[in-house]
Length: 256
Image 1 (tube, rainbow, N blue to C red):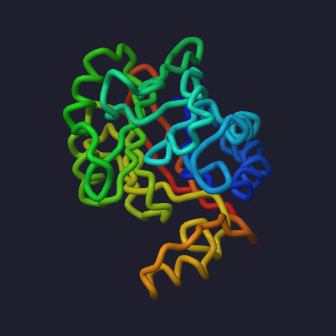
Image 2: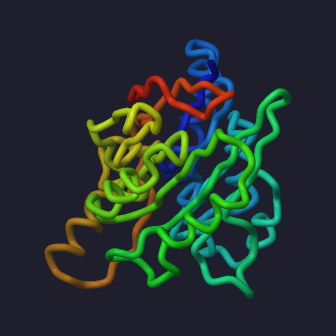
């Protein structure tokens, strides 16, 4: 049996620093073998830069997934050529940098990490259900974990059921609020609708409260800044059989 830790969206400098302070201890305490971190909001002001990606790697991330803010920082697009950084696989083929699938070589076994983005209330990318069906045909490891970066809980649930028995785990990201529906679908696939986030807990999804309230109250454009203050870390730990790609246990993690 192996253990995989998936950490939800890391928000800004405060999130990166809190992850750096806590991740090593979490990995030792729980005997973690592989760590995946969603880093699409890790730069100040959202997006991901080489500096923020390096912070996540130094903190202990093996693979960094992203989402709708993946390409927000044009000056850092070259980081998507790195073997440990993934972008949503359902961006149109032909002119998009990076890859939506990364294979992590863990010695006697390997793990495939797939990043997908939902299309309900999101950007009109290629159909994520069709795309992952195509991708699975070319993956030769049974250990497959999917970061499904999506807004609608119904779309996330549908993806979990669609991939039941086909992948080892499906982790929802993007909404930054950890859900309490972790389970093993079909006795095989670990699932949670949203893993949560890393950043200031007293905030609106990691950003300052005042401007967010003003946006909803006055319907005027505002500038979002990452919130400061006491942070928390949200994630999930999955115990899986690396020979069969079958999950046996999933548990939520919140560190304050």
